[in-house]
Amino acid sequence: MLLENGADPGQRDKWGAIPLGEVNSAAGECIEHPEKVPLLLELYRLFVREFGDELFEDLDRRWRATSGFQGPPEALSLIQGHFFKSYSDLSLDVRFKRTMTLDDWWVRASPSTLRIAMGGDHIDPAAYLLEDDNGETLLYRIVQSMAVDFAEKRSRDNPKWRQLLSEAIAASADPCHLSYKYGRPRTPLTEFLRYFTKNWTEIRRAGYKFHSIIQSWALELQLAGVDLEKYGAKEKALLMSGVVDPDVYIYVGLQRSGPGIYPGKGEHLHFHFLSLEFGPSPKDWKLWASNPVDELVWQFWGMVEKREQVMPGTWID
View 1 (spheres, rainbow, N blue to C red):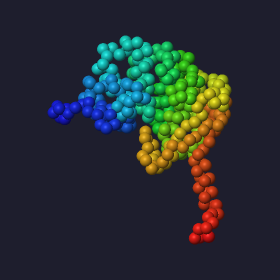
View 2: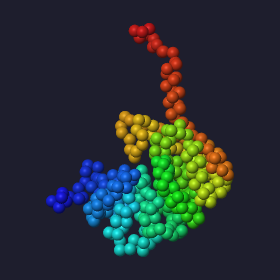
View 3: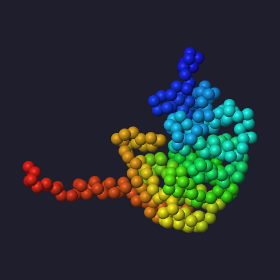
View 4: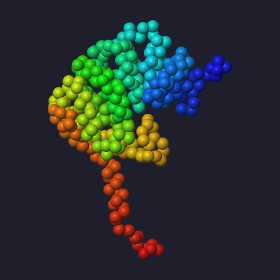
């Protein structure tokens, strides 16, 4: 009704967000509510005619709420059908670039979304060897999205993630490939850890220990056909030599989980990876890291147990 009476579908708020961007942002929160998908599709359909392609612009240059597709797979098919006569006939390079612009902040991509973005059920093995401007490969998108799903315990897509990962490894995707997107090099493993720990609840339940997370990663690689000992030796060498960024920042506070934090509710603390243990079995894998939460506890009890200090010259003195 509003649109029929002259409302501007491209009106931006003070943050630069347009209505389609808000629909897209909310769509990620509806991932566990399939009954809401028909309504989401109608909203996408209302706004996609003029602004749908904005969801594929560079996330690093635009406000998060206005770009980075994170809706259901059906909505991605809708957008493709509107802008392209035959999306699957586009060059592999174009399809790869569009896939790499899917939301990479909080990540709502499913295995189906990634396949649709690449043009269909079958992904050309050559796609796994392509790199974007940041040095990231398709393996990074798979790992980032898979990590969020695993942390959220959305197990229904596990077989599909494993199939994608197996295809990538079979196509010679390098699990130790270096990306320079954030300055210091990262590997798929360190991205898996960073995206997994976006779920603050799970890492908190684990006592801010990374062993179970890295064992999950090792298991997936083993199922994909990776020799864990050879891979582990190479990954450890990259980590211990300082080539790979060994730092991750994890939110510690009152909120349970989410893509953002509220002021005064907590802060992001610095965890530093110290050492990696590996072996032929996923159970052999352990990742040691500094724990700033333990350090805060030590400071607290230090203040409790420390004798009260009296400043000379005060009234108490």
